[in-house]
Image 1 (cartoon, rainbow, N blue to C red):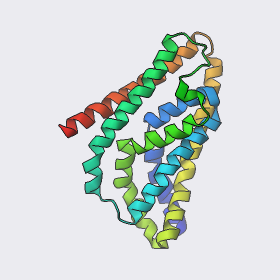
Image 2 (spheres, rainbow, N blue to C red):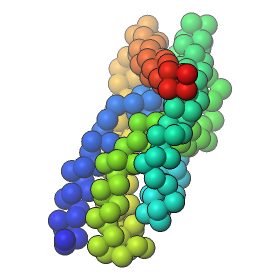
Image 3 (cartoon, helix red, strand yellow):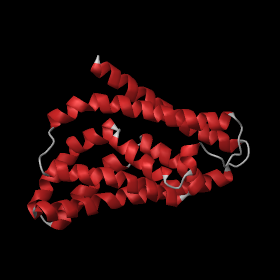
Image 4 (spheres, rainbow, N blue to C red):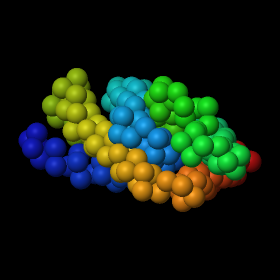
Length: 212
């Protein structure tokens, strides 16, 4: 397999994970309404700190699909509770009728998007399952170029999509929020928070069901 062929494969397959809506994406939009593309880059950076070590560990064979299924339920439960907490803070801020630009404490800090990127990646069972299944095929194919070189090529071809997607959508969210100022802006925040509530409830119930 040539580097070109591998590159087409990585980009085509990665799109199924990168562009899939989920807690990280919708939380990124929330930050984007206030901080623009910079928050998207910080979220992607946090995501990177989880994704790169995971790829290396998978390539080294330290994790197996059996281990993934064993811990997926616990990860989903903890992740669901975390997502619910973030969504609740967002809704509380809107309900208290604070300034439309104000945000919950965790959204005010410039470091919060980075921390959120870490948390919503490490505690997202769908992200982990994707790498333990679909992603494993890419990791296996990258071995054609050697362990270190293969990982570097795979990661370079994959990660730019995360940065482009998260920064781009955060930027669009910031532009949309400027149009939706006044009474419609809080409705946008509530709508995004409602989506996060859905994922939080789904993750939590799935985790409880799997552990019971």
